[in-house]
Amino acid sequence: MRAYQEITLRHSEEIPCNFLWEKLFQQVHLALVENKTIGRTAAGGSDPLVAYSEYGVSFPQYCDQLNALGCKLRIFASGSDKLLRLDLNRWLDGLRDYCRVSGIEAVPDEVEHVRFKRRQLCTGIERLARRRAKRKQESYEQALAYYSGFNSHTTRLPFIYMNSLS
Image (cartoon, rainbow, N blue to C red; front, top):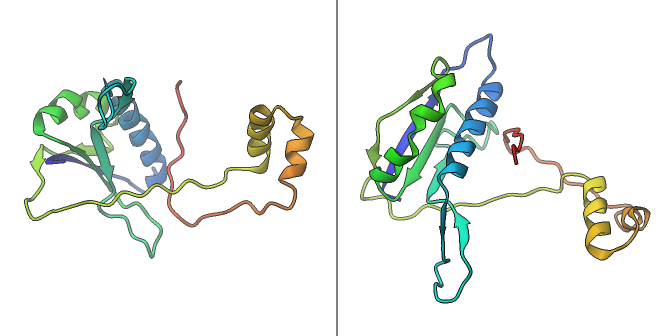
């Protein structure tokens, strides 16, 4: 990732930051889906064709102590040409009053690596039971019994609500 663009939210007293994050990330997600690449995995060879994204995102103002994302989102790509193709301004046209998109910047040379980590939490016993029943060809009641006494995890990590359009 050698280039990035930064989106800054302009929240106010009337519009909470969380609401803006939902709207912003919904549009960014659509842009990333529309610009996915079809190709072979890094192993190459006879691997099947897969869809993948050539973009990354970060939250540079994320604060662990406050469990807050901050007001900035960065979109990374391997080069400025990829960010030009993404055309964030087109995707965020309806949010123009609530966010500002920076110009394309080069990632500084002294940045050597970035660590990405995904944290997926258990989202409910009922959903897990439906999934298990389908995968194991057992009744919903059997699957629900399997998860009885299961302690679902909660988190203090910040998150963004999204609705899938698929």
